[in-house]
Length: 194
Image (cartoon, rainbow, N blue to C red):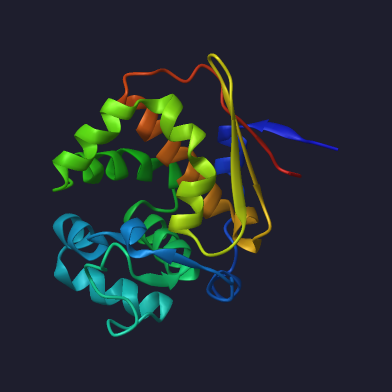
């Protein structure tokens, strides 16, 4: 049975404890962690990167400040660092992260890639959800059912799909992509049981 809730309800779900986040299996590409330390340092000072690393227990030799886009890193690092940034810099307000991520994306150096994505359009990108997910993550499966003016995303086969922080990041990514295409989201809901 499905339990559809508005995005704000999803965003209000409590985060997992750090130990559970760090135990999540699966890896993600460095592209999802691109320049994370530079963004943190720009907003909170260079010592903030060291503090965040200490808080989550991720040394530089396991996760560089500027990971290579095609390198693999534990998905747990993306989740735990995101949660720590929200807790430390945003007083626990995960919704405050969305404008920061949008600003960081706009500052991205890869303007050619952004131009190419705009040329493809949102429909084509969403239709490639399965392939994109398989390149970005080594666990689970994602699919998109793209309608004329709607999309339904389904995720299965990985524990991190249930992580509240990861789920909110996916919504931010989708909204950011659609905003980049000058599209408006009129309704957004999540199935907490699916």
